[in-house]
Amino acid sequence: MPKVVIQRDGQSHEGEVAENANLVVMAGIKRFPFPHLRYGCGMGKCAKCACRVLKGAEHLPPPNWKEQERLGPKLEEGYRLICQLWINNDIELFQDTNPIKPLLAPAAPARSGAVD
Amino acid sequence: MSGLMDKVEFRAALENAIKGKSANKAPFSIAWASGKLSRAHLARWAENHYHYVGPFADYLGYIYARMPERYTEAKDFLLANMYEEEIGGDRHTDLLIRFAEACGTTRARVTDPDNMSATTRGLQSWCYSVAMREDPIVAVAALVVGLESQVPSIYRRQTPTLREKYKFTDSEVEFFDLHIVSDEIHGERGYQIVLEHADTVDLQQRCLKICEIGAQMRLLYTTALYWDYVAKELPMSELESVERKVPTEERQLLQA
Image (cartoon, rainbow over all chains, first blue to last red; front, side, top):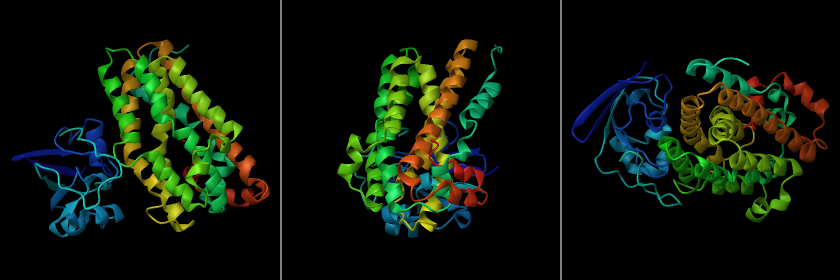
């Protein structure tokens, strides 16, 4: 089972998830990494779930069109949209205290964040 | 009648009930998965699908109002689900309309209720009826577990088909993409509510029965799409030749 480490607000949270797990889905159903992962729309628009990948980036697929559209140059800094990723290997993530702003805003008002 | 099932047994029984007995024979699904539909056929699907899934927040609103106050988590889930359908990001129906427009139809045609078939009107009415009249836990079983939870596995398989066989762009098929994540959360939370609160033999059996009925309603809806819009140009004989080549899971498209 992939080991997931999430760093946020100066704390490190560690747990295991099933293979091919989506961390936003897991947080949404209140399993690890709930309540440590902030997320919003769950559809690659609001970027509230964005994290910098500290370890394990080499196992991830290339950024999809939504990540390219929303993150742009942030991709070079190692950011990914966690709602767009299905995890099959160990990974370590860093989530900023304040969510980054997406390059392109969602059409409807963004959710304030289920687990802010 | 069976005794009270534990959560593991009940979940397995629900999953079995949802599968339905013959959903994988829906001709519209086979035609879709094999790449034989035209964009005009897909436009008719979108014009109907809008009236089935478009009022989803309305269905949930009726359940929310009747859910007992003591089931706070269940009520909060329904509220979150409604929010996410409508204003959590892009409005889900707007993405369906974007797909419809890529198929050659218009927003006006999609939103016009005169463009849905009588069968689609029947499915929509069944959803409203369940939301308004059934025990709220049974209604969650029907609409969230029975219908919504099925979407991710179906669309996960079908989104590549839309891109590769039908040559839609990423943006055009975003409606299918987003459901992979959001409906997975919604479906799983729906299971949690039903497993927690269907705590009598009677309630469990009613949940199972309504999931079976939901599977029948989905099959009715999809089969009607074929006969109403596709059969003249794509007869069953032509579909039978491709049926064996289509993986079972892919035949289930539109069953949710």
